[in-house]
Image (tube, rainbow, N blue to C red; front, side, top):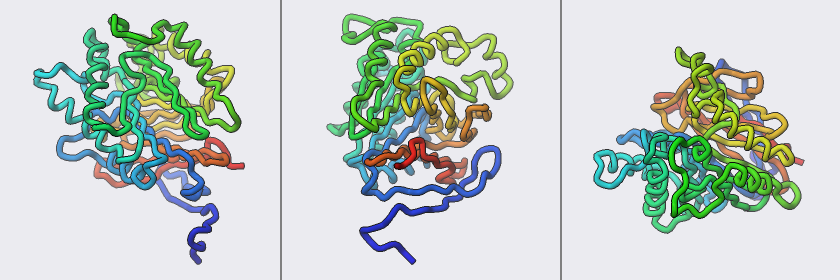
Length: 361
């Protein structure tokens, strides 16, 4: 028997999905009614390599879902929005293709929804000296492509952040973690923001203390605090060598470790519910520990770039070599539902994992 129209109680539904490392059986969740969902946050990273002939299933599926309730939807692109080296100056041979890659993502944000682009290391000129200028070019291009819609880069102007958005119970804090790792100039005469590591950490420590009851704090950046992928020193022939000769892009490098120590120190007194990142091209849900409850790695936005990931002791879910994205539904009266959508090389797939990160009262 179908529930009565207009007065549906939360439906207990069973959705079958294949999880990496084998089938873990049916996914059973209590799906909230649409009217109960206050904010929907979509997390998709490393989407800057769309096929010129086909946008790709992850972006198309995300658009369809966000368009169902655009007024409550926020789409967060977790960095590496343009491969391989961000936006070059106009006149370069790569300029048109870079614009095409960025436009595919801006168009994926349906009218009425909010879009946020977070910078990644590739967006900073692939970590080269041109990086600060390149990231500012990307910010200007996003504003131009948005054509007045609420789609923008945060943090902007090459600043590290934090930049905070409050909507209902959600406090979304965005960071530019490549600012911490960049080997070239990150400040010039046009820089008008906190631009010291100590200043950023102090401001972040204040921002994670969201006022009010039942606040849901999500911190979004490009580089993860933990990962079972290549940047964690796992996977493939080169993985073990990263443990000894790690670049700043790998979690085991000294510079990356100092950044993560600073961030986690800022979180420790008021741990966020979620730290969301991309960087590794996989889908991972990890338990975070004392400084953050959950770490989400959602860097599988480009089908051509899916990479491996191993299951760690902190892993609740791991999906390598597949494209996809994550969705957080924040329920007005309590409860945060995480859903992971993944897709195969031929485009098939869908929901593969679901769990309540914050239980419903």
